[in-house]
Length: 385
Image 1 (tube, rainbow, N blue to C red):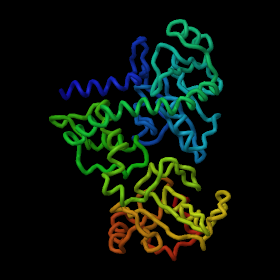
Image 2 (cartoon, rainbow, N blue to C red; image 1 turned 90 degrees about the horizontal axis):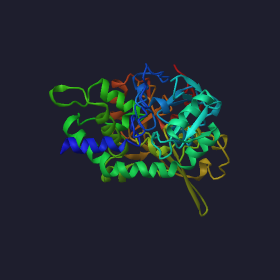
Image 3 (tube, rainbow, N blue to C red; image 1 turned 180 degrees about the vertical axis):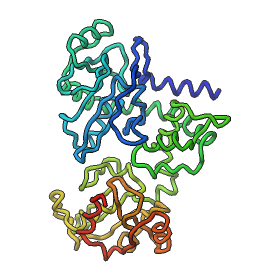
């Protein structure tokens, strides 16, 4: 029964499958080009899928801060574009024939072929050479498209593609991921510690946090399923803990960096403002960005209500308990070896004793109170000292 359920979960990714009904393999036939850094470079940072297995739909980009990203599909590029400012001139794609990395803007895309796409109903493959694209169409069907039109299609179909995948996740992936976690994995895995799903996968794999019987390494399909469960279900905790956390809606972005705040529950922070009958709050993916906004909100946009005299409440997330606490009464550990979504952080604790333990364990420089936070020192945290 267990094997049958796992097989059905794997079939879900036939949307995803590297070999599909058309007989076309999306898996790399040579050593894949991987542009990301570290042990997590083998997986897509958006969905966690294997770059090698879905290599022929793989894309790369470079963020404004110079960080390189690699995705299993143009669908995941479209997801990332919602959060990060990605210059399309930096986006590259794997040529589905030669497996070389090419400029996406000048590529010839084939959309809607019988060779199934990755994470989408409508397949999308790219070629440097128009002749190769036409040969692919002759064999697998589809039609020629430009990068701009293909990206527009990916963005327009994003909502339905996500809904389609999420439905199947709820039905089979999450239950199987939960079962794998309970029977094969260390129970103290904390998914809130990781910034991206590929970081989580890399840690599970390389530190053998999940194993099959007789200590054998977990398979990629099992690793993907359990990682999705941990990342999309367990990371947000049980109902009791959720009610005690900083409450962030899925459409809230940090006004400083533009990232979706809900993705980082361990780091979430908020400032609440009120002026006459008008009330508003802003959510941040860390205290560092919150303090940048606190000191000078208009540096980040037109926010007339965001004045210090209008502040009614500041909430931050206690690092250990993950509960919402009063930011003005918290103790902040600075320059530790633990990084948040935006690098070095002011890491909050409700108690001084817990802050001292964390400072000792993570080689931090100092502990400060809210009233002692200096604007210039906040910006210095962006420096790699």
